[in-house]
Length: 151
Length: 151
DNA sequence: TATTGTTATACTCTATAACTATA
DNA sequence: TATAGTTATAGAGTATAACAATA
Image (cartoon, rainbow over the protein chains, first blue to last red):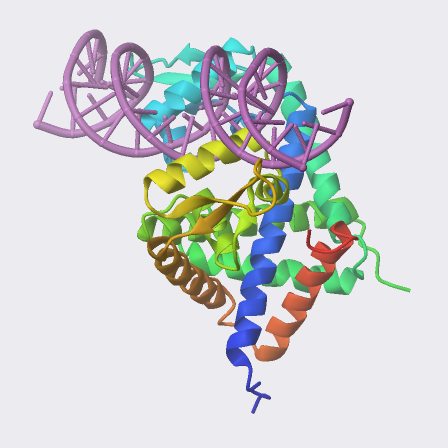
């Protein structure tokens, strides 16, 4: 039905290499934009989550896929830099909420906009139709690896 | 000529989000396969480069985009684990070459094959034609950001 | 003088284990 | 007992600055 290349392995290796190179490029963009705003990549990610509202420490740790203790350290450093703060939670005196400060909000908003713009530049040479197809393929790949949604 | 969406910004944001999610997924695969072979992601990358032959320390630092001192630390740890070694360079008594050991070679070869296979799985649901197009788009994006070749 | 590589120091990010306080 | 979060400790990865040896 399809044309099967005799170099099927080679074609697969090419896709793998493409994925690795693309990943490396996106990581570099992310790191460069973070640095422009005085943030580490992980701090940028943390602040972007907190832009949507306060989050519990355990909740953040789980959504980042790190241990609670690692999150304590992340928040310590973010707090020391005036980017985020901890606040009490009504009704559970064990719990703390991570919140973003005004300084953090401004940095995160600017970071988010610039990352979006720079990543958009990467696909600016494609036609709208190509971009749409490319986006659909990426979404399809991601969805198949997160069968229960973007936790 | 093309249909321009009134939500062009939104579409661009979608592509950016897709790139970030795909990157996160590929990084996770890379980290998981590395760990399976007792390697950190950076060690895996270092060893895969050394699979092709010895490299000078400064050369490696530049191709990794890190300072010389960082590479000294990387090689110290790789050497301590028996994955790589330093050897003298004939004709320049300042220089050292990083080489891979047999242990390192086996780990790197297995790692490389498995990463290729797992990344291949990510696009296994696509038709050959879709895979080819996807690969071409990725290659095009990367090429535009490395106008002087893959360093 | 320039280049190669190392050492010293400091910081971020992460894991594990032991701990406190509250539920 | 279980959960939320912290502390202590260790290790990887990185940067900067100062240094040694060689070109």
